[in-house]
Length: 194
Picture (cartoon, rainbow, N blue to C red):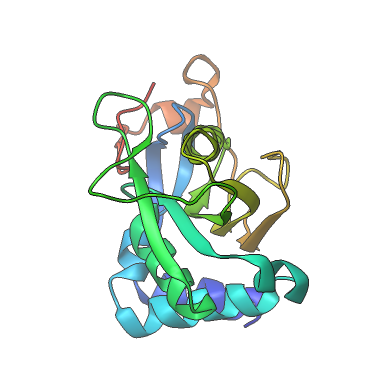
């Protein structure tokens, strides 16, 4: 899939939104990619995950033993990536504020993990999820996401493979452009903004 093909999938799903959005990172943006909308179609979700898996280096793909994703946004993307790679997919969640494995999910000591996200902006959730995986005995050998919103700047401490990198301006709450400040803000993500 080309970048245009990928963005066409987001547009077809009405997942590329315009307005004033508060991201889960607390940053503000005039555009938002609602990955839940693009992933609600199982055929589309499977196609995007398969395209991402195919774009990753073979030597990394062959080492991955399990996919772990952070809840809530990464669950479907992680499941579909597990399907594309032919491995199990589990998730970490935050029942008390910190990511942890629950629901009987376990990792074997040293098990090689792909951390799978839907969207990465600052990388905070990814780094927190990586820490939880390591505390549970897993070894994150790579991370992947459908969308890199960090403008290519995120550092997760492991190789990172996004399906598409999208440059979307983000602003701190105290540095909004006048045009954006004039629009009521929405919080479309799965976490409360900081």
